[in-house]
Length: 236
Image 1 (tube, rainbow, N blue to C red):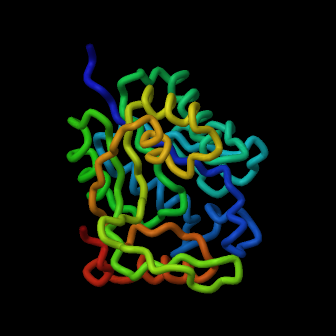
Image 2 (image 1 turned 180 degrees about the vertical axis):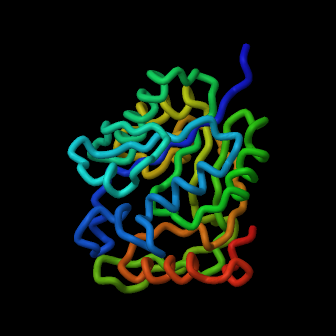
Image 3 (image 1 turned 120 degrees about the horizontal axis):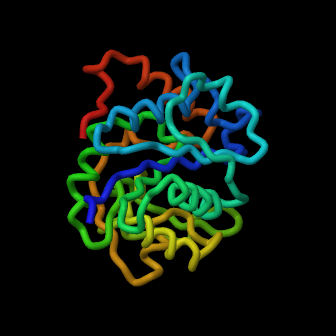
């Protein structure tokens, strides 16, 4: 058998409704480039990744103009949910020759501060794992549960709690089976794999690997990306 390869899959079919950008947030410019361009550049700088597939909405008419000369694979097979978009991307990877046992690293387009070293750390930790795993960070803040009126209903014990990040790295066949079984309820690939009774490995990553979600996040990402390299605090 040939050694397992590593493919990156970036679902970028969402509209980013919470961002307040008035356009799909993956195309909002941060530090002079569309957010998606920063994300793809980081993945392209990881030598062990064979190829990256970007999953777009079927009616996306911005990608080619926003990222001219993109050398990776693109598929307009995005669905109404993240799970549908990832499943469409996995099917496209199969059409490109990816095998059941190849690894797929699914990464949020909006985690644009990704560093190649963090991806390498994930691959190092999970390439020999029976399940796979994900980048994540231990929760440091006190956690509160709220009621329907926006008032605190409980303080949640943060001991052993981690905030999930991406990439999330699983064998193609496993993550495909997991997402097909869980469907739209899967908020990430790890939750679908967990629903099969498996325990993904947590690989610690820094806070800087945050997901640009709210309007104020764009300015924060801009500051990090334009800061001198030594001042960014992007190390693990």
